[in-house]
Image 1 (cartoon, helix red, strand yellow):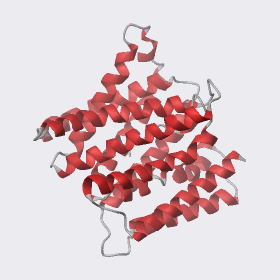
Image 2 (cartoon, helix red, strand yellow):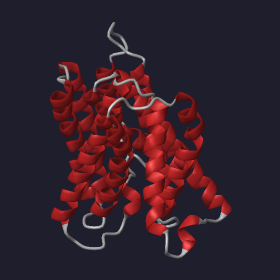
Image 3 (cartoon, one colour):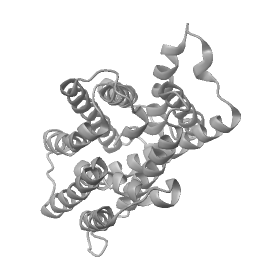
Length: 299
């Protein structure tokens, strides 16, 4: 998954138009599914995960910097303490992205997506010690059920367990902490500034690895896809943010599960694979747990 920003930091709607917000949300997750499918394709072609992660962040950085050119340069600077938090947030996104890309190298798209959707459940669990939020019995029950769903998807007790499932769970956990940090930055840092810092951290940190591990794509299509993972990830973030300008998170959150449908379809069309019964069951359990948490938070 392309690690979308959490819904909470995009708080106040500019215009009440839920239909448009839902349409933009569906478009954002379609773009994120293109990112993950392209990564899977390129990984099967032999391109290293760190090289792909570098391309994702370097293109992100270019596209995030471009709109700021010609304006005031306030988006480039921040007080030292705030800058440190945004840099750490960017490092978490980088860890999540690398772990996700490694998982996609070995696992089916839908399996990775199902594990990644445990991230909102992890956010709810960590919001107690990190944010001081109160979580009642309904949500604690949903958290427990959600983690049971993760175990069903990963199947650590079975002979077909693959270590890359742990990379996917690492990606979901890093994304959860990233989301909590973004909540703390809500109203303090502009979204475009956070985007810029995230791209900067990933690009600079991954540049040496990309240099030493670089494998040139074999075909023009592979070149297009390698650049495209950054474009689709950045555009997905853009439309994700725009969606929350038209409708609140409480309206949009259920439509994030369209990502699972997109990836199931793309996995079949591109790679000829379909999720097995246990992956479908585990994904359904995780989705139900996430929707219960969403329902209680709405109340």
